Length: 344
Image (cartoon, rainbow, N blue to C red):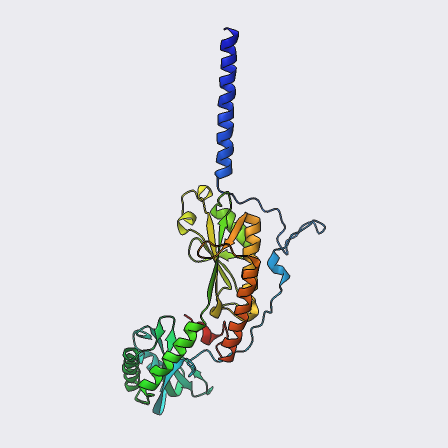
């Protein structure tokens, strides 16, 4: 083999090696980031007491575990039309349950019946085996579908009258026009004070795998939601709505090989009226967004793809404080039972 042939062969081999190496480097660069073995000790787990440990950023804001007292969770004249149902004689919870309508809605508004417990002297949803000296039927004045209208009020009257007839009761219905007017006013207030916030985190360069997103979110306290691709930050009170939501592509979460599925954005969301103010939801949303953006090499944007800067977050936080004050003054504090019903 001549020197020229040998040289060309060596040069060709070098070129091929460079092409293969570049392809491998490009593939690694473009591949979704993967979850890594978490070497940080779990809080409360046994281990080396002297080993360094990095706590999630959220731990710097301890939260109260006891929720403030609130109004009763049943029918309330603040957001409900209530029709008293007088009885000649006490009636049983079994009879009341048997007389309930098959659907507990009047149009798009929740319908409910409560009984006045003969023993405890409190209003409650009818329970078998208990006795009640009176009943009351109610329908919600407004929710996120809009205000109670005349047709829905008429459906409420029909259902409440049928229940009253079944338990030998006499209902007393408020004036329809007055209640519909109340519904419109409440709906107008709710529409002007219903805040649902969301931030979008977008990958700067390399995409993320579902496992990578889940691992980073879990370090901030997020847990898997019911729907694939959804995670939630639980409230400090059991049974309360989650403080925050985190969502990414459901199809990516359901992929046959999630590790090779590319996610380029995720959404953090806060339903303000559903979460107690004491949970500091916006503070935690802000910190979660900043922490995730830093750890996952992402940017924080709004729904239109515009980058959100720290000054913008400050403005949002100040506006929310005013919103909380307004809801408190109306006895519809964020996260209360009445607020959760109204803003649903």
